[in-house]
Length: 386
Ligand SMILES: *Cc1c(COP(=O)(O)O)cnc(C)c1O
Image (cartoon, rainbow, N blue to C red; front, side, top):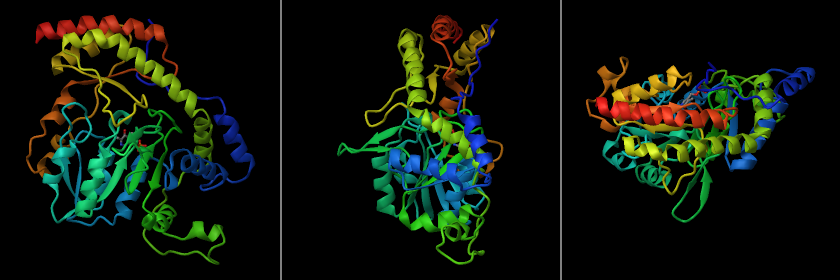
């Protein structure tokens, strides 16, 4: 039986050629030719502020927490339905996490609940564009401006996705918050094995971002000839990836349009094919009018944990690897004792009921056609058992 994995990294074919070129150039440490080509690509295509490649999105989020100068006692508002790195970056600086619930119609943060969570110790709001679908950034930015807070976009899943303001202005996700973090982990749309990027949209942070990136030194300015010696001038760490990683990433960026087209085709085939399953208590993803779909993920929401289990098992029995996703961070072994006790029912609901289906460049239409009736039959079984 042919096994269909949940994810399979896609190679464009140029990756090893560009890595060979980087090696031949004699500079394989960070911030060389390929790193700068990647930075330029993002700045030109998406209207991002200063871009800095990192070794992961986790690193980019940790840089964000350093840049915002998060101190013990500061409060940070973030969704509970997210990856641990969104939270860890701020925990490492001693912040208190204030978890917000997800929306009823989407796993993204419930914007209407944010105001009630803000107090004099609140420093930042971290939004996660789940499945590459935008949070309502106009609302979030208005609130941040009103209370003098910073906004960090965890745009790990959000490459090539957009938000439309009520004025009609369209902006790339990652270009709206003061800071944003992307991931190029092999499970994302555009990959470099491990990899990430910090986007600095607020010019006040640009100079310091580059220093933190280069171990707290002004090395980058030195190599541009702006200072005649470099030294230790701030805190920092080694956040920049080698040229080998950047060369791999650049090969992927050259194929971004065709990767995105293919992923969207797959997503639409799932969506059209699964319309008939909505009657079995399965919810398909909804894209708000202000958001676009970058086909990072195809997820469905079952009516119960049991129904989800039936679907995952039925697909698994036929060789299709479907998976659930995040476990509520406010109920995690590490954070539950520190959580303020508020119930976050939508977060718990997605924890129990959300299913992700295989989605990768080489997934063929026939496999998708085979999954649809399996999902329909097992959803009915799950309903009956419920
Ligand atoms: C993938 C992901 C991360 C972590 O990315 P890494 O590059 O693996 O560090 C963080 N946040 C979200 C929402 C993610 O999906």
